[in-house]
Length: 501
Ligand SMILES: Nc1ncnc2c1ncn2[C@@H]1O[C@H](COP(=O)(O)OP(=O)(O)OP(=O)(O)O)[C@@H](O)[C@H]1O
Image (cartoon, rainbow, N blue to C red; front, side, top):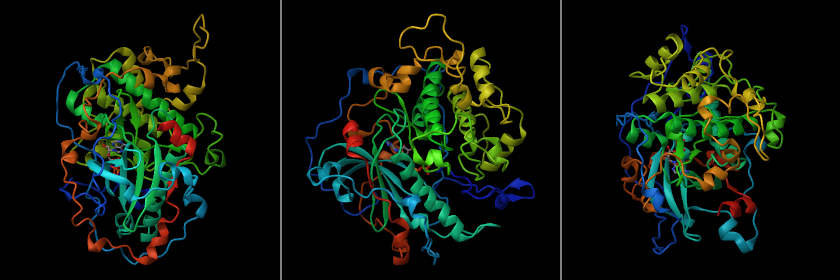
């Protein structure tokens, strides 16, 4: 779980000038799979997605090749599960929360129509977050594999202690807003390095997002295996992430949760961003339409919520200052640093220690073995003072030095894209998605059978798929809360589904 203080206004969290942080420790968690007995185990001879023989090769990209313990930044025990309180009914603005419940014809109903839990057979657990689990599932009708993200309604509705200036209703409204935002934002995006959302639906207890299954596992997992990565590999991932972040910013979306756990590798070793639970879309008219973009470099919106994973969180967020989309570029700096050094720039035993270091320590020491170009790149992204930090969205839009002889079809470069660290990156192929389709990334995940989810942590894949005791009686949803989730169901357009089938 990535939230260390849940969307609280700074004022509520600032006590005597220092931020109050919700410290957390991982704990054990239930071993049963959630959901009713919905697996029918009917299909055995399903076609599997293609995998090339080269996928078995796993080059060691680590210069030091050290394997080290990595602590997951997730927080599972954010709050205890109790009976939902008598939460006041909230009236959500319908425009914010409604999506097309169905957009398809009867003839393609099962392939393109609304879906429900009965359509999917659970195969194994892929991961777990604050509000539920992510499972690998198989569509009974098409035999396709998907990642099903489940969110427990009761955990979203749960009682939270009010802070100085927030009420329970405020906190609930924020959680509902974030829950719907993930669906709304993902349903509007199509980018080679952003996970695809195909369907959402809900039942009495849970919300379900049916996502493209990204089989290569988390970057977190590969970093754990490899220790550190060489500069070319780091630059490759940095370029793919930058392309996704720039695309989001153009659509008026701030991602706010960049970390190795949210970067997945596809079957060819290309990076795909997942988990849009903390993303925020601008309230601006231009970006709401999704058709036009705010001017490059223009703040999407001044944001105030303390949100994100502390290790990768920009100082201006932690200081309680208004912040903009630029916070994502600082997080990219932290992630690049992490890939090179084996740990993020500021670490500590708990969130408070980390936060103090980010706010008070000098700029982080960039690994001495880094090239001058990498030092410059990291130094420019990791500037604590946002006014001195690279404004990548602006740099992206500005033409950089033009090559002397421009070949036909050659893309324009910019001062960000033409930086030394990206000298081996073919940006036009990367941004069009061609690179992803035609070449392999620097780390090829081992995939012998997609259903084995070999690149996911055995902590999750080893969990029992068991329907017993799936819903705690204390998690019953009160009838008066049912309407809060109306409008969650969604089906991607037929053309979108066709393009990605
Ligand atoms: N599309 C996907 N394909 C493969 N695995 C996925 C996919 N989406 C999520 N996962 C796995 O499930 C994990 C948890 O997913 P996600 O981060 O979306 O959940 P979350 O509840 O928002 O987590 P958190 O509370 O930590 O933010 C991921 O880190 C990843 O390992």
